[in-house]
Length: 512
Image 1 (cartoon, helix red, strand yellow):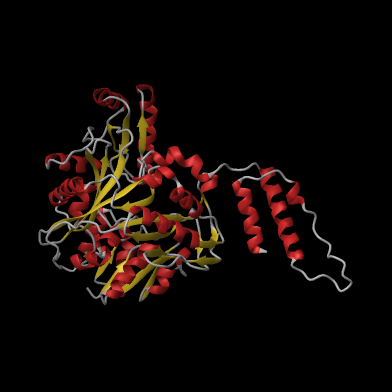
Image 2 (image 1 turned 90 degrees about the vertical axis):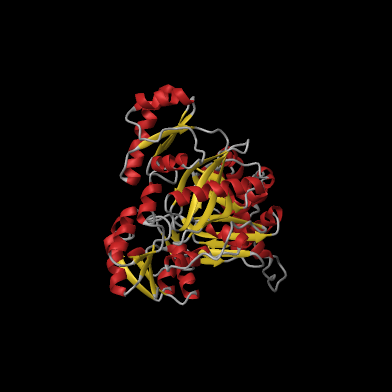
């Protein structure tokens, strides 16, 4: 390969551009009008406009992306994650256009793209799955019959889904009809496919995934596990490698299961098998993500293997040099820094980034697709960056992440930084006592209560007056020796304020 077009945006586009540059491969970025000045556009060797900001008119237009690659003289297309990365038809179209697809074969995407098909494949190769159906449900009556067989609660899941879309927990028969209708409607809106299946709902499991690499010469290896249980509404927020719940023996067993599934699907390139891990150490295959994962950096840091470079190398025909699965060294942790207001139900925050202070020091990595001057809109995912750390132990990794988060400053919009700081300080998280429902249970203590409007206004007034008082105290006295007029000390008259109010005071003093 001499030139690669990256069919994506943001931090993953930058990540691929950097990998290409280290391998001596030219890069071509694509962009919507909203991303015309984005960092990935500036860093690529070339850039091609796709269209207006909506994804459906730009990053999801496969024919435009292929035409851009051909016009730029690119040899290959890297899809990144999201958008068209797991669309079998796009992988096939890239191949049919005479270009190299940097990902698994279209046939493997098709085999693993449907959760029901993936479950069937797993069962056929002795990989345990959560009890459930392997064909889409016809109606609520059928769903109730299956649920009665397995026992409530059960989980409805979109067959073509991901990211929690088209997913509903049903705890009793009376809820089934409405839940199925809602899941099917959401699945159709998100994926263009309303197929939904049902499986037994496992209470309090962990979400543990296995990274695999497979070349075109028959070699497939496991690179160990990632702990992805800190989730909100099925969206991962913090990931780490290894998992505090996985022993060496369990790692080998899960890795072997992931390799069996990947080989059965004829898999090539980087991929991830997702599992539920129960408290009794039984694990159940969920699905395979046929792309690079958002959280791939934690695996890179504990294995020393550049996954994106190996995506490029495998697509170029190279053989994997590893003869066996790789065990982790040390501990890595990743926080997804998003443009969301955690104290206000994680509402998205938009605006222009005015200032960024990036954390540094040993074992700290910052993967971002934005910078000073970037405009954050509602057109795309709210993730601004990934803050990743490595340390010899989990306790040291948590301490390092806390320090790095403390250094991080992003001005111009709300971010999830303070939420992540509180998670690092949480006793249960520090002990590794987490599961996929942990964050939902713990969330009120991590985000803090939202203050009434009148208290917010009072705190803002108090903070401004306090800042003015301190400013005037620093001002030299007039020549006649009389003190300067000072603002009324209204802050002292207010009752003790909540932590959010103290933060407002601190910010006002800092800005003053």
